[in-house]
Length: 109
Image (tube, rainbow, N blue to C red; front, side, top):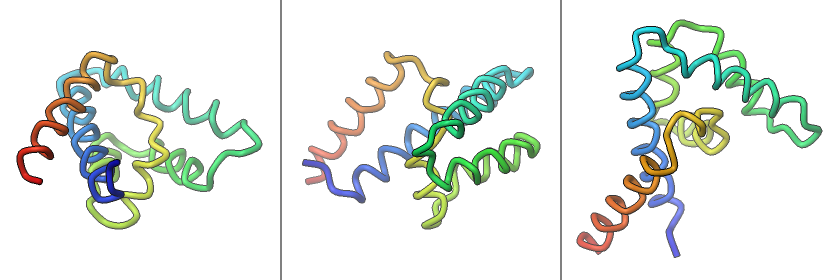
């Protein structure tokens, strides 16, 4: 079973990969998908307050959005738990990170 710290670390690795992928796209096409997903999630009755925070963040320029996505603070950790960036990475990219994290975590345990 993974600890909260391990889950937060893995979430940070995923966020870093998302940021690299968006950085590599000069048009930042992924941001439109993220904004649309955030809007859809906010329409649900059970939407978390953090989604409203994301909606506000997503109105800003990419460098500011990126800073929030990678923020190591408690707020950054909390925001990544309800991140609308989940569609940016392919399943293959996510599983690669999960496997790398698990291998690294096994070697450091």
